[in-house]
Image (cartoon, rainbow over all chains, first blue to last red; front, side, top):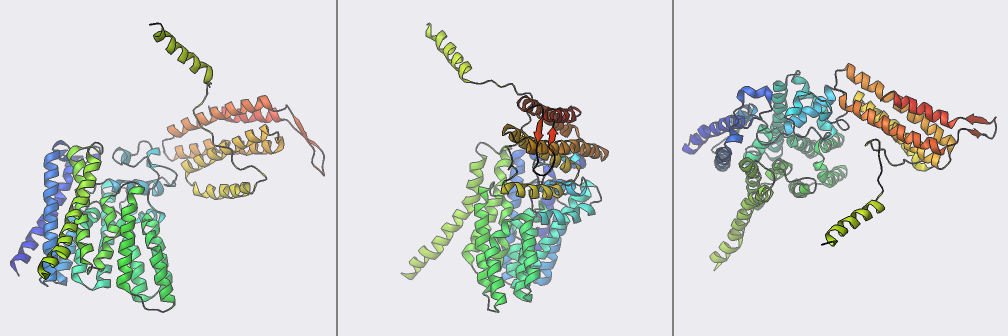
Amino acid sequence: MSMMKKLFFILYPFALLSLTIFSYFFIDSNLTYLKDFYSGFAYKHRYSATFFYLLILLIFFTLYILLLKLISKKKIDFKDLRYLIFITIALLLFSYPAMLSFDIFNYISTSKVLFFYYENPYIIMPIEFAGDPLLSFTHASNKIALYGPSWILISAIPYFTGFGNFIVTLFSFKLFVSMFYLGTVFLIWKISKNLVYVSFFAFNPLVIIETLLSGHNDIVMMFFSLFSFYLLMKKKIIIPAFIFFIFSIFIKYSVIFLFPIFIYIILKTIRKQPIDWKNIFYFSFLLMAGAFILSPIREEIYPWYAIWFLPFISIVFQKRTLVYISVALSFGLLLRYVPFMLFGTHFGVTPFLKISVTLTPVFFVLIYVFLRDKLWLKIFSR
Amino acid sequence: MIRYFWIPLLTLSLFKIFTNVSFAQSNYVLPYPPPMPGSFLYKIRLLSEQIQQYWYFGNFGQFSYNLKQSDKYLVQAKTLFEYEQYLLGEEALKKSDMYFKNSPKYLGKAKEENKNIDRLQKILKEAASKHIEVLNEIKTHVPEEITWSPEKSQPVKIFLRNKLTEAIYIRQSCL
């Protein structure tokens, strides 16, 4: 075993464990279910919390790049990767999910409106159930269901496996989302048959943090849309693919951007014409990146929206400039949490800082690409 | 010096003259008049009403649905009475009464499910108060009774004010 590989296998589980422990510093004081773990550290020591968060991010991105290098040099094989994915899921499953976003509480309260109170979550808001213990820490309780009906329906699985216990429900939602992460990684493997491509997605710190730590449902949407593509690509079965694609649209709606591509694939499949799948995934990436860029029209760019395009860029890994931009953007998006973590407010300088920290890494990558492609070539061609 | 006194006084006087002060009895807001009978949109409205009945499942949902329909039919009745379409107006009032009577039933059911109904009860009271305000206003415009003469049957007398008094009575039970 090479030195680097050894180092990685020691440091990576340690980083995951650190993140899991660190996440518990962010427990909300209103979350009485976890009052024994409440320290208030992240709110009382904002500078230290921000420092540790930045340190963890740097460690994760360094390890990510190291891992990609090790895999491309064939120093890490399929078996190693399976083990790494397993420990990533296993260790982050026990992390506190509302460290960076409170969405998981919205998922639970929305499913509670339907499956416990038997009311329509598109009409009745969680806040209408005065006295419900979830209200003290659910942030969007004054809104009707924000997600599509497919998500609300399948959220019955983690909701009922929680057996009415909040903590069990919370972690069953995390486990549920983790299974879709695993499914998406598996599909990328089935489509690409390339360990680097798989790792590029599976170990991207943004994917790990937003999916396995925060438990965002974007991965569920992406799994079903990718699965529908996979069915058309490998099995050529149109109706199930269509059903899964529609199902994915009704999880979070943004995959509707892929609809023209999906229709194009179906038409080509019916006519039995060859399909350039590399181009299909490339254009899927572009469309979902478009949806991501347009997201501020609705609200703002949230870091987990990057999950809309990351599975596609993983499959068209040859587009190196886009790969670099995606990594830089992943880093920048995770930095968006820093201003709030530091100042404790969404107002003042925070919005400006959020945009700045998101774009700065991308800007540096663009400079790097420009220098590499233009200047260096010019210098060496003289 | 005197202008410092006259300017504010003049401004206040103008403000008093040109602004209408309304003394609303209830903050509850009724909807705009919906599509009226005879229009194509009215048929669509009836269809959507049927579909929405299922969409608004659950006791809170049914409470909202019934109150919403009651509001709509009350506004419809008011508009039709203003246009002296008494027969259609009376039918709309009947529907508004029916939906209004249903609303507290669903609140009762929700209470049986241990749901906190305080907020919705308050909404129901406000709605009842607003409805009574509107019904009293209609009462001043409509005749005591009208005789409706259908083409192929005997004329029928409709005691409009009695109907309105009845509608007020239904709402008063929720105050």
